[in-house]
Length: 255
Image 1 (cartoon, rainbow, N blue to C red):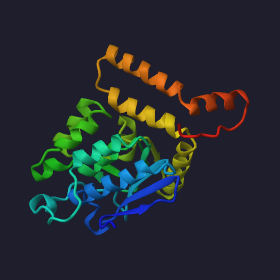
Image 2: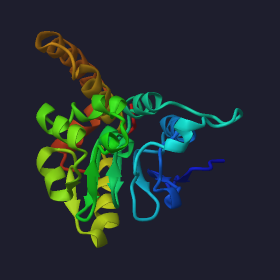
Image 3: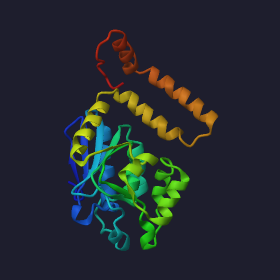
Image 4: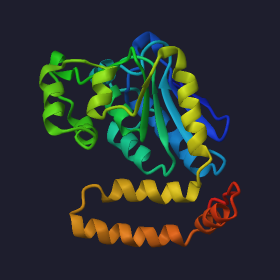
């Protein structure tokens, strides 16, 4: 079905792989469209609890597909823009973990940051390198400035300097850094942990997290108070509290 990504839907963890390693896994309209389509299928699949996003070969993604920018794809291909993809990621309602096996640069960095959590190999590098070819990372500004400070963001964008994994961890671009040999196992363990949580609570929680982040303090608190009421009304909340009091493992119903 897809030409630029691979899908492994061995539920509850669905793995999406950017699959153009010969081109360093670029992100263009076709890739964005295929990812949006795949994410919609995940959203509609109750058995799918977590998404792992990674890149084939030795690179996560080197960024935008410059050839597609110069010559848009022919008609008949289901395409999407990068903003459409990023919005689809934030509206999925299920955790997305970026498994970063190598460089995450330019638009590839934005795609990584749009994921909820990031597990990176200690050899991975990170950067907004657009300035080197006379471009500016416009779309991914919205993602990066919501994860790290303005000064660090501007330093990256103005210089195009690449960060190593330790610096990316220190400034908040990534969640965890592990040895390359441990990347698969560490990501699988984290995905498995998230898959055991209440999908209903996670869905409401992620929606509230992303929708409230730009609100003023008082409206944000009022909004989150109402969302807390929705969580407390879940069957999963009642089950979780009951299981805690009975010292047993909860059985989630997803509602």
